[in-house]
Length: 165
Image (cartoon, rainbow, N blue to C red; front, side):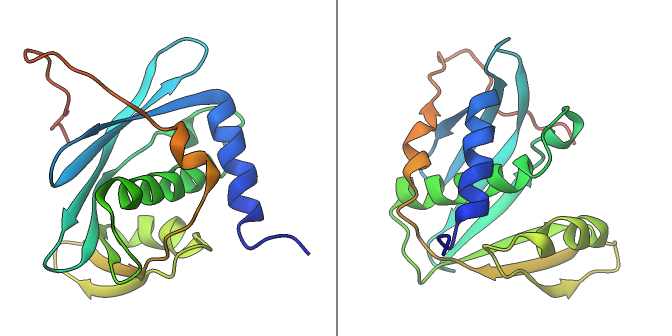
């Protein structure tokens, strides 16, 4: 019998064959970056996870990995989401009592977040502005690929967070 995370482990392996993942940590949030392993091109810098210690949640502030626009990258966005959540939890010393929260459009929720088999996202609120809030339980894992996320170092004059929508 295959292990519980066989599918995601296979896709994470593919992810790291093609891309480098790196992190710029902060006290309450981490910004993550995806770079093409061969060219060094930054594929995405729109990956931000925030820590709410009092609410006991990991908030997915931005998750636009842009991997679906790359050839032969099916399911790599799911693998990327999994690895970033696990890395963030390890880095911030988060346990299973936390949960994951996010806001997105109904289309993104139904086409992406509901299909993540390692999470159980439920729609918790729909606003008039076509945005929904969703929550999922969280389970820390001893996933071996987490250590493959490197750390970014910026000098004091370099801007590392792109705030464009």
